[in-house]
Amino acid sequence: MKEVVEFLKKVKVYFLATVEDDQPKVRPFGTINEFEGKLYIQTGKVKPVSKQIDANPKVSISAFDGDYWIRIEGSLVEDDRVAARKSMLDAYPTLRGRYNENDGNTVVYYLKNAKATIESFKEAKKEFEF
Image 1 (tube, one colour):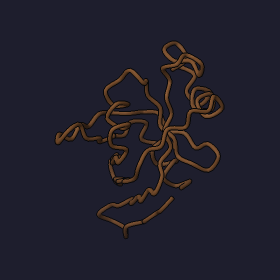
Image 2: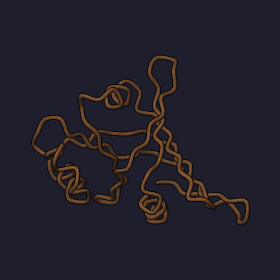
Image 3: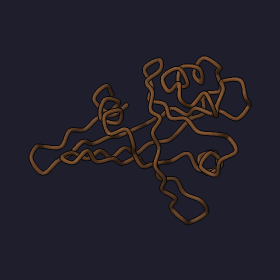
Image 4: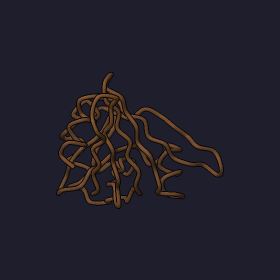
């Protein structure tokens, strides 16, 4: 998982795909954090993406750094602990102007049953499960 986290931090922006009814929804994300051996993302509970994840936790993540691309599939699980939210916000202090671990809006999710691949046209595919 370390290589997956490093890749996502390096690209800074990745794309998260969810589903609403029968329509895929894709948007850019920038928060990624490893906490207690799990890969976390963050958003606000009031946002449509949070409601989509709550209705169907299966997601896909994709990013490209110019040479390599990553694809991740898995399910997101909400972690309602203050410590998990604080870890994310400590990793992204610029979010503290909009979010607080105790604001009732900040939500963090970790990936469960995730499968990731990092690929390029130059090298063999690398596969990870976590």
